[in-house]
Image (cartoon, rainbow, N blue to C red; front, side, top):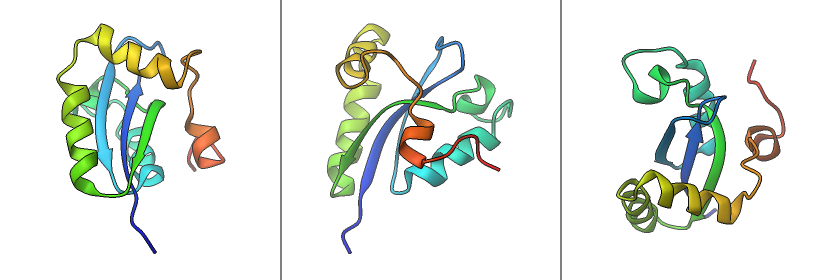
Length: 104
């Protein structure tokens, strides 16, 4: 079985803060972000970033890390343009990707 790697962008419920990350298990990572909401020790937790608005799938970690660094290096406007290309309505994708939401 081939491993998949994901670059993703999550935001808070009011869509005012963006967090870009990379993982090899998107479902687990989204649940971790949700469980950390309000945790001042993490950026995503501090700003309640757990709503998925963008993701890409890669077959190797090298390409995923490269894409993550590319996105992180962009301005907010450029990040929003990247998201809008895949998700024009800025819909929260958690339930669509995981099949359920919120986690139990």
